[in-house]
Amino acid sequence: MRKDVIDLSRAVPPVVPALEAALAKSIEARVYRPDAGGLLRTNRPRGTEEDRRTGAEWISQRLGFTPDIDRMIVTNGTLNVLFLLLNHLVGRSGTLLTEEMTYPNMQALSGILGFNIRGIPMDREGLKPDAFEDVCRKIDTSKVLYTIPTVQNPTAAVMSSGRRVEIATIARRYNVLIIEDDAQALMVEDAGAPIATLAPELTWYVMGLAKTVVMGMRVAFLMAPRAGDAAALMEKFGKMSMWFVAALHAELAQAFVANRTAHEATTSIRKIAASRRRIAAEVLQRPDLAGGPLGLHVWVPTRPDARSLASEALAAGVLVRPGFQFAAELVPTGAMQGLRVSYCETRNEDDLRRGLAILAKIISARNAWPDTAATSGH
Ligand SMILES: Cc1ncc(COP(=O)(O)O)c(C=O)c1O
Picture 1 (cartoon, rainbow, N blue to C red):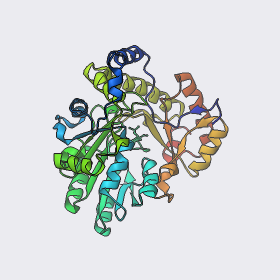
Picture 2: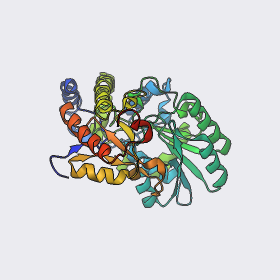
Picture 3: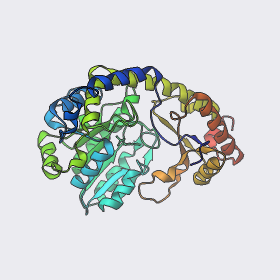
Picture 4: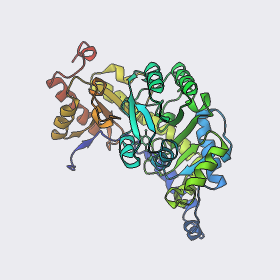
């Protein structure tokens, strides 16, 4: 990528200047110590009890209760655990159901692990219940639902409480296991209860630290439906060291949560993201983007062709991701006409403004704003 490109493509948290000292202090206290070598000589399959307690405490912010540590597994990031879970739960002959646009690694994992993937249509709240039920009825091989109910990737949709209940009820009716990825959920202060609390016996709940604490933190917390389910996963993969959480990162996660650096990071990330999202709404002249639940990205619907808009933007020095890159089944649908714009990676707000202005100009020049936005000034 050209060095001067303004990168609006990665949904990563911003740097929080005020936290740099706290992070350095935690590193010094936990890692830079006389017995640090001992940490590197210790494996932590599924995390130590303290690692799992840390995870249980962290995710209790969303769950409203602190899960038993026997249900917890701590791994090297969300993707690490998704790889194992998809292998364990879906297998080769099964089908993974996802939102029709989803975290692009799902598509890659279906190729690597050999399962089928089926994208389910979405609306403003994400997964559509009737479409989900329809697929549950029609597919008779084993099925697992992977969903991002809170700040969906890429649409930033957040399911209402009612929608969560509907999805949980259908999953129960058809006995569909659920993987709930709450990667950005702590960006939203009052998101509805996780599906894991509505269909606990079916749901594997995962939350990583990379989006709401610090990018590069390769630690994620998995809560299994029951202690026995966690044990069965361990039984299968327990000797594979690739997913033993790295000791130094696990120690840091413990320190960040115990001394509340992690909580402060999330609060600061929200503040910075809110300011940047306001800039996005203003420069793109899309006031609607400023409201609603907060995330690290917004979804900007466009008229066709979003892919060539993204290419044109890149030629002009701005990197954004068109909807097709998130297609679960690699089959373009109308819903994919849009761009995911992430606003937290640029070094400062001026760069963000410049990038967004270039993007807005391209979309306007192509008359590619959708009709609703066209009436509000474009
Ligand atoms: C929905 C979602 N889940 C998981 C991840 C990856 O998380 P981790 O860095 O913890 O592997 C991403 C990264 O973009 C994501 O968008």
